[in-house]
Length: 60
Image (cartoon, rainbow, N blue to C red; front, side):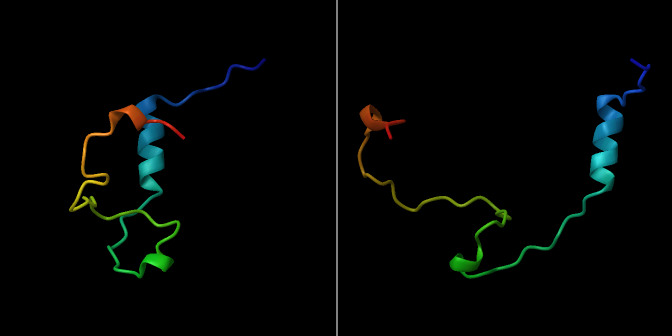
């Protein structure tokens, strides 16, 4: 094997971040949102179900 030169974590992170840019937020219809990333957190107005249901958490 040859002696490979590895990047440090900081060097790799710097290289990755140099290749990305922040895009402006857009409002799109729900059906066009597939594959997109949320620009902000979405919080449900109501709990569903409206009671504690921990016995079913994680059940599929």
